[in-house]
Length: 359
Image (tube, rainbow, N blue to C red):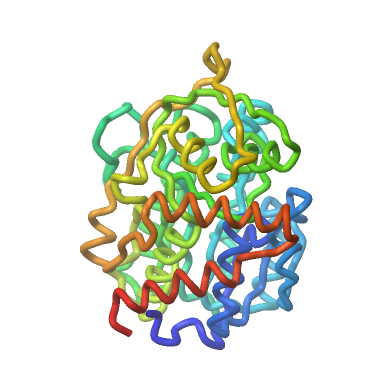
């Protein structure tokens, strides 16, 4: 799938101790990449990162610490940079908006500047979110050229990060000047609600459900009718790796924004998600709040991924029902049998990808 692009390649991943970052470094290592992570300590206990126990360089540092970040890049000399370090929670952004903006905006700025000063860097992917768009509660999906926005501080900070990315692409990493005045291509990737085994962040639907199931508790669900684009964590990671491959090959046409979301069957209400997960683990029991949440949350959000389908050949591998099954099975096996299904899930995902591509 990736033409050995990542084998022996030096790759820096910020936010590697988080949920999505830990899955990404695991996949990169399985392809033979020389990976260095830069992040704060794992944000939860348990954590997917600690469970994996990967033998790789792990630098514990704050993305807002420009001097330390630069020193790691100078020393490691990465060719590819995946930027996932962020304050990722909507409700936390209300509690501490300053930390949210300083991490998600200024942290991204520090990384771009460090990359500019590091001669080895050839490609950067800034990972943001579907919430970066100005959400008008449309029934159709947002496209990559729709306006950035964001109601809450988290969403707004990610919109700002996208505007920053576009500015740096135009000002310092302009594709028309690639190979002349600079050697770096910059893209951004936006994904929907990503689920899968190993996420223990607070105030997220799936982790909260799984913790409650393990404790034998009934979880009260807020906003049960809200619709989100649910997808397994491996789906957008597959997209990021495809974009990274093309950037490293010097393909200037992919140095832009990309959406990675599920097919229409993945745009499901919170209430229906809980019902689907409960079919795979009987201990999942919830109730639905009778009063609306006291903080604003979008009711409807969809992505249009036709650009990734047409230009990258990227399409979801697992439908919604497979995604919910894989996710519930991962947590059930972890809590009941102390088993970590990460390797098995990745192998099955790659097998299905290869079957589809006749590899």
